[in-house]
Length: 119
Image (cartoon, rainbow, N blue to C red; front, side, top):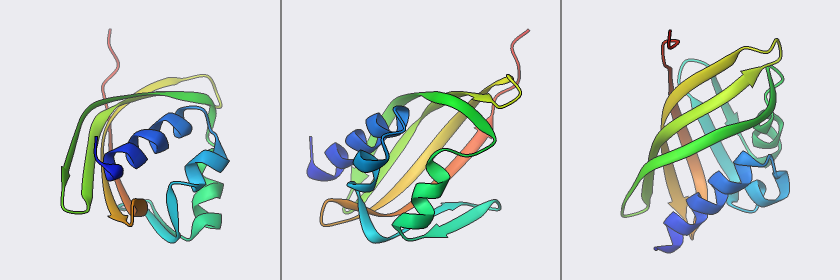
């Protein structure tokens, strides 16, 4: 596994546990995190505040189905199951684009899409 993929793998594992120290260790100091149309955070402090979004409770279940790397870009695809503060379980698919610098995450663009409820 490449250094960049190892960093993204460590980041995902730490995010599942809301381990702020381990997550922040994967990032450059000037990291940017974007969820297009929703937010754009710059720097570790802003990133740290978004790790545990106040609209959600508990830890997410994150499954990475594919990770691809070219040059200093790692793309991770998968799904997330999370619970909102009011107890609703939501299912999402994601595509995260990580721009890497010296083995650390410099920029993350997260594309999320909710899946319809299964009946």
